[in-house]
Length: 163
Image (cartoon, rainbow, N blue to C red; front, side):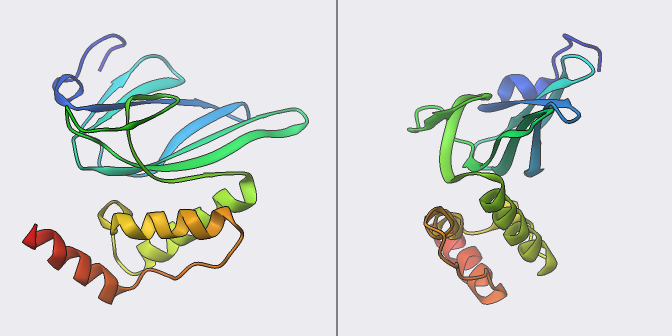
């Protein structure tokens, strides 16, 4: 796709995320999520879109010659038109924030939790939103959190079928 060319999914998706990758400068990337569409702006930037209900992890890191300036991870559910949402940088219009963590040691803890979920054969985008809230609440105050389990995941999938 050429710069400035619009992908059909970009126009129909509710949530747009601007990703930037300038090695060791600004690194905004996705850890997981089902991208519905993509528009490349230039060599370093692109905009990806998510349809309502999709969950994604957005990692932002910035540094300079002295080290890390900012590191954070947000796990967000894309919302539908008319749904309430919270705003966050580089995400339009915003989303339902399930987890918001900053500081590299805590971000790394969340990334390891995501790795653990994938090791179970579960796509992190399908995890129960309450689990991301649980991790947020525990990691925010430097407390251990419960690992996600296959039993918990099956229960979540069944609960989702009923509603």
